[in-house]
Image 1 (tube, rainbow, N blue to C red):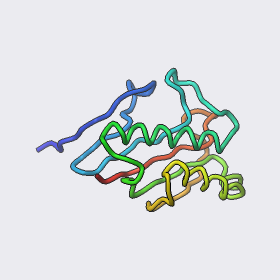
Image 2: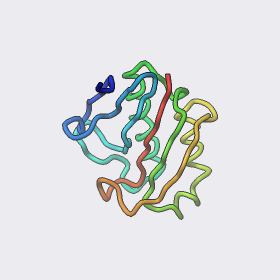
Image 3: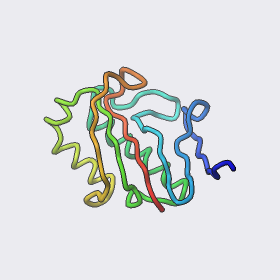
Length: 131
């Protein structure tokens, strides 16, 4: 028997990958980056700006399912430069806390990767939420 899923597809990447898939009470979000509705990278060279935009996409995707940032239980942050990320961690965590609207209550990992889908992307955020 096939697993029942609700799939959300919107924005410039919709033809290629869903924004999220909901199975039961769990929402699996695809990696979110700093991109506009036409598929152009935003905040080029600005790690904090890209982080803010990516969280905006996370929030919007969760809202599609009637969920909020408070429903996130797991988060993986992919970065292309871990040294810069760690040096700027205090500011990045301020952006993260601002995005959640409180101190996040989610497990988290930060992982350095060689590159993301575009060399303009410095950060990608992937989450799991339970509603």
